[in-house]
Length: 338
Ligand code: PAZ
Image (cartoon, rainbow, N blue to C red; front, top):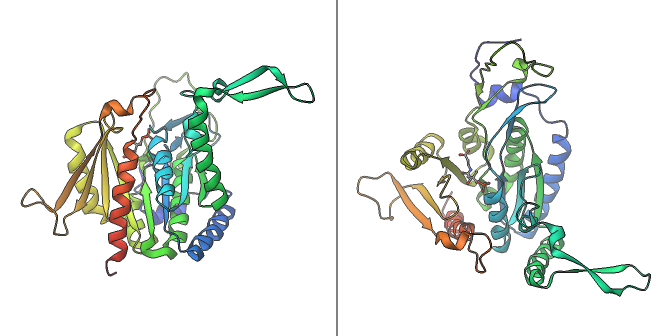
């Protein structure tokens, strides 16, 4: 077993870590779907969503996980579809998905929406099942859009579990999507682990207890955003997310990411305020109002927190405003010379 810490570049990562077994088939399906979107003249957005895991054993019993329910990604995907984009929704297996997110088993259990009609038997004598009257209007609205999206074939879904699955998929999908050049957007809302255990350092079997403390030294996940910008995406519009719990770090870290990777926009969000407040950080290319010497422009997007509480009638989702603003900025980006 190797014990020295290793520093991985994107190149050495992909040269030493195995690809997921079904990657080739998945990418063939992605390629065919992208060809249809190109033929239809659609803009396409890749939305990544949910958290990645880091397995500690080759025969996985234990793993580390990254926080993310998949709300941001699933909700944003719906608004992108509404705005006319075709969407590749690359999400953590079993995390929230567009449309079905409205009926998550924990917040809005599906079975609680249904009623058995006591005195209305069908011809074969089986009682009919109906939707609870107060849930009907919302269900009909969601179902109508869902069926329309299914019929148009504009939503394509892919799943990952581990950070390794995520990195391989992200590279392959980005490379495929690069045929759309500026018409492609990359909306990286997934919560991706910064550390991992290379397969060469993993224990084959379940790590045994009984020997006292467990110390694991993890390697850094390579900063693939730089390679994504420089090599995989060819002029695509790249939106990354920065999650912090210390509000003081949000803007400096977002600026540092732009400086380091050279992409178009970082959306900063504080863990506890993310449902009603985010900040767009972009390079200052002139023409924007800045705080004087700034190389970067910060634009806050806020909604009334009271409108985000579950159970209220007129819920408002900040993703609607995020996507609305990004669509405008992407349109400007497409119109700019290469
Ligand atoms: O999925 P969710 O709605 O619970 O959370 C969304 C989020 C906070 C994971 C996302 O907005 C985000 O910031 N993603 C990037 C996380 C990171 O810095 O790795």
